[in-house]
Image (cartoon, rainbow, N blue to C red):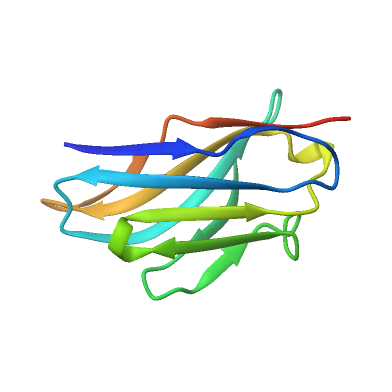
Length: 118
C-alpha cells in the first residue's frame, strides 16, 4: 500500500504565502515525477507545477515567478512554496507522485484547501 498525505493549506490574505507538503509512505521502490494540480469551483483541474526525479521543473504560466516546487527524495516528499498569492489561486490543491512498485502509476493526495481572501 502507498499513501500520500498533504498538509499546509489554509486561509491567507492576498500577497501572502503558504507552503504545501505531500509525503508518501508505504512500499516504494522509486518515485519518478511529482507534482501539484488544483481544482477551483466551476473550473477544470489544472497542472500547477511538476518536478522530475532529476529536479527539472515545469510551471503553469499563471504561477511562474510566484510558486516554487521542490522535492526531498530521502523523505519521499514534494513541496510547493506559494508566494504572492492571489484570490484566483483559491482552489483545492492535489499532489501526485508517480511511484514504481510493481510497475509505475500515479498516486494522489487527499487534497488541501487553499483560500486567498481579505
